[in-house]
Amino acid sequence: MPEHEDDYRAVVGDVGPTACLPGTAIEIIRPRQNRRPPRYALFDFDGTVSLIREGWTEVMVAMMVEVLQATPTDESAETLAAVAKEFVGELTGKQTIYQMIRLAEEVQRRGGTPEDPQHYKQRYHDRLMARIAHRRERLRSGEARPEEMVVPGSLELLRELRGRGVRLYLASGTDKQYVIEEAGLLGLDALFGKHIHGALADYRAFSKAQVIERILAENRVEADVLVGFGDGYVEIQNVKQAGGVAVGVASDEAGRSGRSDPWKRRRLIGIGADLIVPDYADWRPLVAYLFGES
Image (tube, rainbow, N blue to C red):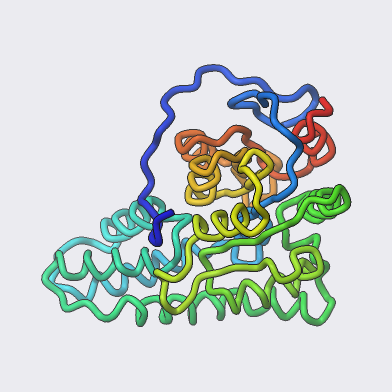
């Protein structure tokens, strides 16, 4: 598998009318076909399980606008925000460094002298951490319960899968040390154990595709026993390329409304998701479906 993460490219066109499992918000894009029950499950972190970093897009775009305004451009702040929002969205799901590499390219395109993308990444991260510090502290102090800062139904789904003997893996484009720390704040470390992966200083040394490759190789299994969950395109694309089942999580991170985010839904269907869920409120029928019990 490649050591880098490919850009988003839709591989599925209009799927036409779809149906939901009766009485649920679980949308079936491609019906389950004679597959064995899952034995391994890969989860993305931010937006798929954790909501600690909800609002990160606004923080990133605002920082990028400031950087681009310092170039010899006559574009308005509104125009630059639209440009940044478009390419941030285009690259969402990849490691953060890729968005910063693109920012450096946009600076150069406007006649500016770009800084090292790692510097931009640190600048963004410092701002994000300031924004979410109170969330992390409320979890750390016990003032907030983990259930308040995860996609609804996450903990129940993870516990049910673990109880059925499914081995759980976490793979995130966020830096590994922060994924480990925030997973701990949410009480997820006990569920995922040592199988928590995240971005490294050398971004070429980590990819979600590599994690999947190791899952299959180390356990000597075929991908038909792998299920992947994600709200970004990378993990869905990687799971499908490997031959597993992909559950697209079109989560409404800010509102926790129980309705699918339309932009995420279109994007996840386009990259090949087999199912679309807005969250895991319907975790019981979701598990039953994945195990061929319904």
